[in-house]
Image (tube, rainbow, N blue to C red):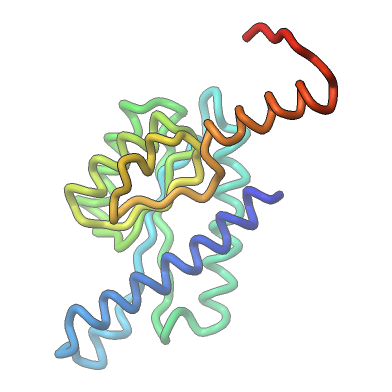
Length: 178
């Protein structure tokens, strides 16, 4: 549930940044152009080994986009959602992100559900200069710091540290096998 709330908040912030950036980038847009929909692409693990992550992420995104659009959109612009399934496979994530960038012409990309997919998406998002919001936890997603990539989950290294602290201090376990 916490992951979903973080994803929701990050999506709203990310979309606001896209709108602000688009407005500042071209102040000569006509009123008609300003009302073009914001295109949000998502590459999620809807099938495959990590479908338990991608399914709730998809449902959350659909609910958020529906709520935003019912409230009048963002700055009067509706949000269009384009979802691709990477099948929990980084090679398929590459195909999916290329389709979102090349065919759908998205303004922002959310994904992947897992770190390997997020890393592939990151490379393509940086090349295309499209913001990426990654719900996965791998520290490499945002290291070194990239101006186009954001991670919603705490890093995997932080999570491991906290688990080890809990095992040692609370449970008094001194040996762990992984």
